[in-house]
Image (cartoon, rainbow, N blue to C red; front, side, top):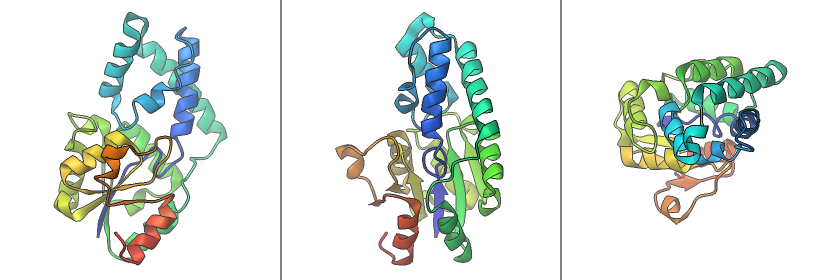
Length: 216
């Protein structure tokens, strides 16, 4: 079995933290409460996110300023808090490892952020490959990141499950040929997404049980 994991909102409960970080950054930069931008840009890499911010705020948006405030908030937050691991993550990773599964991460976050979170949570060693947003040309919902992750595993995307929580991520996985499995976080699936899912579960513990029982 080959499984490719998204990171934010899927393995770690970080998207809620990002909402707070963007809210803080927007207020500091004089744009008001911009917490909703975290949801609006779910699954996108930095370049794609910047495009959406420019489309939303125009010349009022100054990326260096916003990023500085966002990073300040996140740095302060994670000095005081552990990485919030999602329910069932360790149980799922352990089960897959014991069953000789190949595993990869396909996250739109930067490599520095992804590797940092994986190391701090103590789960980096479970993964055979890590692909990040700054390692590919086109962001989710384009399929590039899943195609690359499958390639690094030495497998066809057709033989890979993709665990995701965002629309952009699920579309990317589907377009790559993977079998998309959704574990919702901040966003609930619409009709378009429901039609492409191989499975939908409340948490990663349920995903483990579904793999064990061969329901997906």
